[in-house]
Image (cartoon, rainbow, N blue to C red; front, side, top):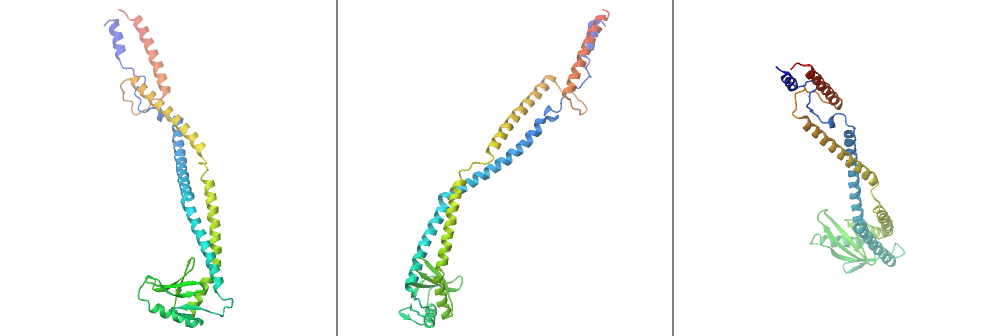
Length: 289
């Protein structure tokens, strides 16, 4: 064997100083960007959920401003107007002396409460249809209509003025008159409740108009985190491509007993290989021809 054969044998002997395969990329060997990326992704998801909720609430406010509150205000104003008119009607027709009484039932006018109440009960008994109001008389400027509620099995009277005021008709004649008077006397209280409700809805409308102009409170924070997350994703993608390039340069993978290769080990590997090549050069110079 000559010198060239010796060198060829040495050069073709596998160098076992360091296995060359890399089973895992640098992304799994303690890269601090990984944890930051995962934490930031969770934070961004939470902020996006909050932003979606804010947007949903904004749409709801816009709908309330455009439809719901204006409709409520219109209904309440109409009710208040009607209630004020009916209060004036009752005030103008009810006698100041509560002992005085005047009610028309059918074609007859009654001045006795008990007789008028009994006449109402008899008219209810004579009704042939259900859920269809029938006019039975007049009291204090209001038309009286009675219908039978088949679902609840009871007679219901409607006092019709500007608005409709409903009450139940029972079997007690005097009790019926008392309920009619109570319906009329309770109108001022109902008017006050409607006025309070109107004020509340109008305040809600003004509050909604102010709230709908507000932007998402964490908008700047979300934009900042999205920008950082995008930068991290770019860094990690570059890191992964770099690992792929190193694996291509290393050539075919070799078995390594499941051990990982770190950057420090790679440096030691190339230092050993350099020393090995220098040793081959020296050896080649002293071997005989």
